[in-house]
Amino acid sequence: AQFRSLLEALLANGRLLALANAVDFDLALPQIGRPRGRLDARARAGYLFNSTIAGIEGADAVLLVATNPRAEAPLVMSRLRKAWIAQNAKLAAIGPVPPGSLKVEGLGAAPALLKQIADGRHPFAQALKTAKRPALILGQGALARADGAAVLATARRLAEAQGLIRADWNGFNVLHTA
Image 1 (spheres, helix red, strand yellow):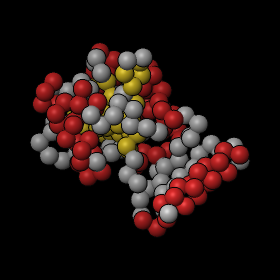
Image 2: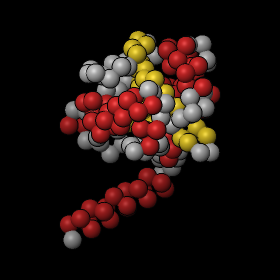
Image 3: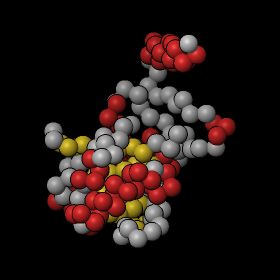
Image 4: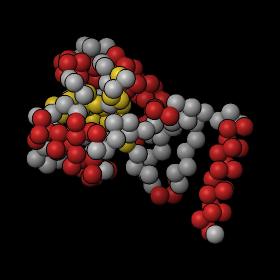
């Protein structure tokens, strides 16, 4: 009964937000100390882990943006490790490089790197473009920034420009920590 009333309250809240034409909302509790990103609720694929956790091990080139899957999502990290071992997936990171035995190329921490890759002006852009199943994993660290909406838009543009989104594959992933 308690679960049902909570579910009804959440559904009612969702309807209220829809009536108010809310385009972004976050149900994370600020007191738990986690970063809060703002996501556009109208574009469902813009806030999901689209390739699925199991599917990420099929990726052959992965760009991690402002995320450390080892700490934030160990299951995702184990699937990335499988991809790296089984098919020699190329892994690179903008922001923190996950520690451990996984070979992840650190590209730096400047947000401008994301734009360079999106524009095809960075060497890793070619790795994404030529990959059969390229992927990007965008962490909450990027979305919680003051310019988080712009980072999300640039990441989405990168995904479209470098072939991460196709009819048979969607490699655009948002990794939530809440």
